Length: 114
Length: 111
Image 1 (spheres, rainbow over the protein chains, first blue to last red):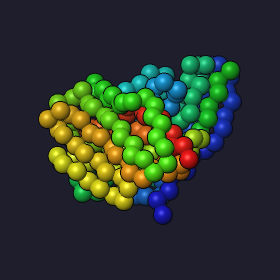
Image 2: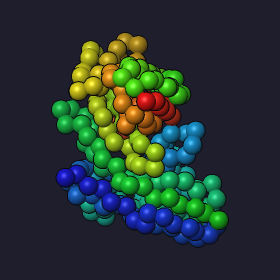
Image 3: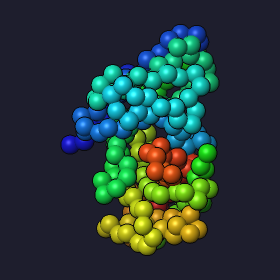
Image 4: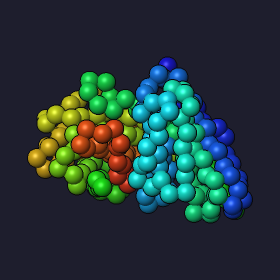
């Protein structure tokens, strides 16, 4: 069964601190994505990746870095966390396009920056 | 940057009724649309995708696409209380795999 896991599920961080959100997929998908979801904004794409070693900027990349060390793992890094980054973060893996079109989301990480 | 607009923002339908949700892209190069359902406190789950003009049906769910008007719609017949959720539409354009999401339609099906 397709699976995407995220850790941690909940995180409280201090302003200026470093936060790393981790994502693992067992779907063997090439593409992975990091989104944040805020009330009134829907899902917004932060970074995405086409495969191991690649990262691309999404629509709101400022303040975030991403790392894709392997096919299975994709991390989101907040070097200097700010309260405006308080949100729910979703990781997803997928193949979007052609006859095969699927995308699976992880359970989400609720991040609070104080 | 592509924008995806969804309407209505919220919708209430009676159990057994038909729910109709709309989604429009701002990009004339749009190539794929996806519909997702997100129950409260859960992650989004893909329902259906469509890339050709016409209609696609899966069970109680039907998706229409009119590429000329950059518009897709999702119709849920025989709506059930378990269909109450946030419905998200996403689109890609220009051959990239960077989906842009709309803000969603909140559907409530009351018994």
